[in-house]
Length: 166
Image (tube, rainbow, N blue to C red; front, side, top):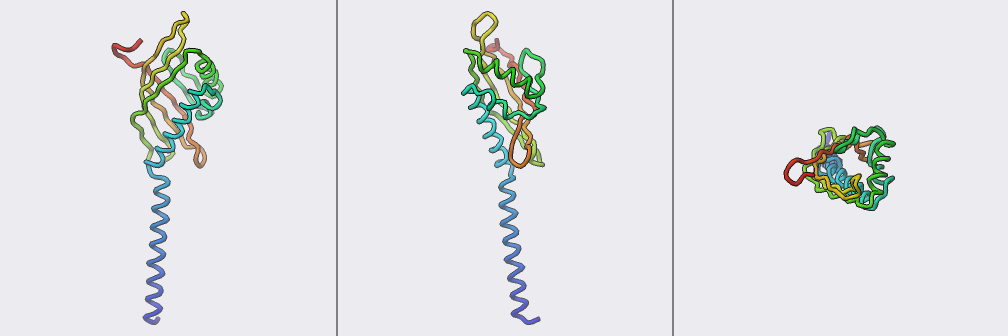
Protein backbone atom coordinates (compact mmCIF):
# COMPACT_ATOMS: atom_id res chain seq x y z
CA UNK A 1 0.00 0.00 0.00
CA UNK A 2 1.38 3.40 -0.89
CA UNK A 3 1.68 6.33 1.48
CA UNK A 4 -1.11 8.09 -0.42
CA UNK A 5 -3.41 5.09 -0.03
CA UNK A 6 -2.69 4.84 3.71
CA UNK A 7 -3.32 8.58 4.08
CA UNK A 8 -6.61 8.30 2.17
CA UNK A 9 -7.80 5.33 4.29
CA UNK A 10 -6.82 7.14 7.50
CA UNK A 11 -8.68 10.27 6.35
CA UNK A 12 -11.81 8.26 5.51
CA UNK A 13 -11.71 6.50 8.91
CA UNK A 14 -11.30 9.86 10.65
CA UNK A 15 -14.16 11.44 8.72
CA UNK A 16 -16.33 8.40 9.34
CA UNK A 17 -15.75 8.57 13.07
CA UNK A 18 -16.59 12.28 13.09
CA UNK A 19 -19.91 11.69 11.36
CA UNK A 20 -20.68 8.81 13.76
CA UNK A 21 -19.96 11.12 16.69
CA UNK A 22 -22.28 13.80 15.28
CA UNK A 23 -25.01 11.19 14.71
CA UNK A 24 -24.54 9.88 18.25
CA UNK A 25 -24.72 13.41 19.66
CA UNK A 26 -27.85 14.18 17.60
CA UNK A 27 -29.50 10.98 18.83
CA UNK A 28 -28.46 11.61 22.42
CA UNK A 29 -29.85 15.12 22.23
CA UNK A 30 -33.23 13.85 21.09
CA UNK A 31 -33.27 11.33 23.93
CA UNK A 32 -31.62 13.44 26.60
CA UNK A 33 -33.41 13.70 29.94
CA UNK A 34 -33.99 17.44 29.53
CA UNK A 35 -35.54 17.01 26.05
CA UNK A 36 -37.68 14.13 27.29
CA UNK A 37 -38.87 16.03 30.35
CA UNK A 38 -39.65 19.00 28.15
CA UNK A 39 -41.93 16.77 26.05
CA UNK A 40 -43.63 15.45 29.19
CA UNK A 41 -44.10 18.98 30.56
CA UNK A 42 -45.58 19.99 27.20
CA UNK A 43 -48.09 17.12 27.44
CA UNK A 44 -48.89 18.21 31.01
CA UNK A 45 -49.49 21.82 29.91
CA UNK A 46 -51.72 20.65 27.04
CA UNK A 47 -53.84 18.70 29.49
CA UNK A 48 -54.10 21.68 31.86
CA UNK A 49 -55.11 23.91 28.93
CA UNK A 50 -57.81 21.39 27.95
CA UNK A 51 -59.08 21.42 31.54
CA UNK A 52 -59.18 25.23 31.55
CA UNK A 53 -61.13 25.10 28.29
CA UNK A 54 -63.43 22.50 29.91
CA UNK A 55 -62.74 20.09 27.05
CA UNK A 56 -63.37 16.66 28.57
CA UNK A 57 -62.27 14.62 25.56
CA UNK A 58 -58.99 16.49 25.16
CA UNK A 59 -58.30 16.46 28.91
CA UNK A 60 -58.69 12.69 29.21
CA UNK A 61 -56.83 12.01 25.95
CA UNK A 62 -53.58 12.23 27.96
CA UNK A 63 -54.52 9.13 30.00
CA UNK A 64 -53.53 5.59 29.00
CA UNK A 65 -56.54 3.27 28.53
CA UNK A 66 -55.83 1.47 31.84
CA UNK A 67 -54.70 4.55 33.81
CA UNK A 68 -55.50 5.07 37.48
CA UNK A 69 -56.65 8.42 38.87
CA UNK A 70 -56.71 8.96 42.63
CA UNK A 71 -58.40 12.09 43.97
CA UNK A 72 -59.10 13.12 47.56
CA UNK A 73 -62.33 11.70 48.97
CA UNK A 74 -62.87 9.12 46.23
CA UNK A 75 -61.97 5.54 45.46
CA UNK A 76 -59.34 5.11 42.72
CA UNK A 77 -60.74 5.50 39.23
CA UNK A 78 -59.36 2.96 36.76
CA UNK A 79 -59.72 3.20 32.98
CA UNK A 80 -60.82 5.91 30.59
CA UNK A 81 -64.55 5.39 31.17
CA UNK A 82 -64.32 6.01 34.91
CA UNK A 83 -61.83 8.88 34.50
CA UNK A 84 -63.95 10.42 31.73
CA UNK A 85 -67.09 10.38 33.91
CA UNK A 86 -65.22 12.11 36.74
CA UNK A 87 -63.78 14.72 34.36
CA UNK A 88 -67.21 15.38 32.86
CA UNK A 89 -68.63 16.13 36.31
CA UNK A 90 -65.59 18.19 37.32
CA UNK A 91 -65.36 20.27 34.14
CA UNK A 92 -69.12 20.91 33.98
CA UNK A 93 -69.14 22.30 37.54
CA UNK A 94 -69.83 26.05 37.35
CA UNK A 95 -67.36 26.70 40.21
CA UNK A 96 -64.61 24.62 38.62
CA UNK A 97 -61.13 26.10 38.71
CA UNK A 98 -57.83 24.26 38.73
CA UNK A 99 -54.43 25.74 39.33
CA UNK A 100 -51.29 23.62 39.18
CA UNK A 101 -47.77 24.67 40.04
CA UNK A 102 -45.25 22.20 38.66
CA UNK A 103 -42.45 21.07 40.92
CA UNK A 104 -39.88 18.32 40.52
CA UNK A 105 -39.73 15.81 37.69
CA UNK A 106 -37.69 12.73 36.87
CA UNK A 107 -37.11 10.55 33.85
CA UNK A 108 -36.21 6.87 33.88
CA UNK A 109 -32.85 5.80 32.53
CA UNK A 110 -34.63 3.96 29.72
CA UNK A 111 -36.44 7.19 28.79
CA UNK A 112 -39.90 5.64 28.63
CA UNK A 113 -41.20 6.62 32.09
CA UNK A 114 -41.36 10.01 33.75
CA UNK A 115 -42.70 11.34 37.03
CA UNK A 116 -43.95 14.89 37.53
CA UNK A 117 -44.97 16.48 40.80
CA UNK A 118 -46.74 19.65 41.74
CA UNK A 119 -49.07 21.55 44.02
CA UNK A 120 -52.68 22.11 43.05
CA UNK A 121 -55.77 24.05 44.09
CA UNK A 122 -59.08 22.66 42.82
CA UNK A 123 -62.28 24.65 43.31
CA UNK A 124 -65.61 22.84 43.04
CA UNK A 125 -69.22 23.11 44.20
CA UNK A 126 -70.01 21.32 47.46
CA UNK A 127 -73.27 19.43 48.06
CA UNK A 128 -74.62 22.52 49.87
CA UNK A 129 -74.11 24.59 46.70
CA UNK A 130 -71.19 26.58 48.08
CA UNK A 131 -67.78 26.60 46.41
CA UNK A 132 -64.82 25.00 48.18
CA UNK A 133 -61.18 24.63 47.29
CA UNK A 134 -59.02 21.58 47.90
CA UNK A 135 -55.31 22.33 48.13
CA UNK A 136 -53.05 19.38 47.57
CA UNK A 137 -50.08 17.59 46.09
CA UNK A 138 -49.94 15.72 42.79
CA UNK A 139 -47.65 13.00 41.49
CA UNK A 140 -48.17 11.80 37.93
CA UNK A 141 -46.44 8.87 36.25
CA UNK A 142 -46.14 9.21 32.48
CA UNK A 143 -45.27 6.45 30.02
CA UNK A 144 -44.08 6.88 26.47
CA UNK A 145 -46.52 5.01 24.27
CA UNK A 146 -45.36 4.39 20.71
CA UNK A 147 -42.71 6.65 19.31
CA UNK A 148 -43.66 10.04 20.73
CA UNK A 149 -46.92 10.01 22.71
CA UNK A 150 -46.72 10.47 26.49
CA UNK A 151 -49.67 9.09 28.45
CA UNK A 152 -50.57 9.24 32.12
CA UNK A 153 -50.58 5.79 33.71
CA UNK A 154 -51.01 6.95 37.32
CA UNK A 155 -52.30 10.31 38.56
CA UNK A 156 -52.18 10.50 42.35
CA UNK A 157 -53.58 13.53 44.21
CA UNK A 158 -53.71 14.06 47.97
CA UNK A 159 -55.13 16.78 50.13
CA UNK A 160 -52.42 18.90 51.71
CA UNK A 161 -52.42 19.13 55.47
CA UNK A 162 -51.99 22.31 57.36
CA UNK A 163 -53.86 25.38 58.53
CA UNK A 164 -55.10 26.33 55.02
CA UNK A 165 -56.56 22.91 54.24
CA UNK A 166 -60.36 22.68 54.14
